Length: 168
Image (cartoon, rainbow, N blue to C red; front, side):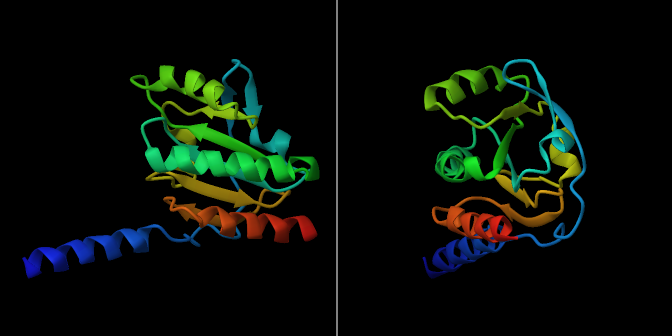
């Protein structure tokens, strides 16, 4: 029984290590991309840069922590959108689950753009090997913060970083 407890603790600590800030991309210029939104229009990263911080949130409908994170990001978006802040929520749902994206987003009344990356091409260029994965960049497209996973309270760190970027 003691061995199982130690094994459980080791797994929990390992997960906690992975649910941390990933600084390997910080300072890197965000690669440009063009993805389709829920209305069938294309959104290009370079076209939304310049007004304020941009947050990319890689997520999927089958990922419970992703859905919790999106709800928190809506609150942050509501607070900062008038200051130039934008969120691009990038769904990596594939052909099996992509039909669930639009109904889910509409049911939650999310007001930030939802983009479709069904082949995970953009996720790959941002090294989003697991989700949820957050990339925050300044208004010029320089990556300033990345984070893998989501636990309640992680959004506070994101909010702090956005505050810092808006003061620049």
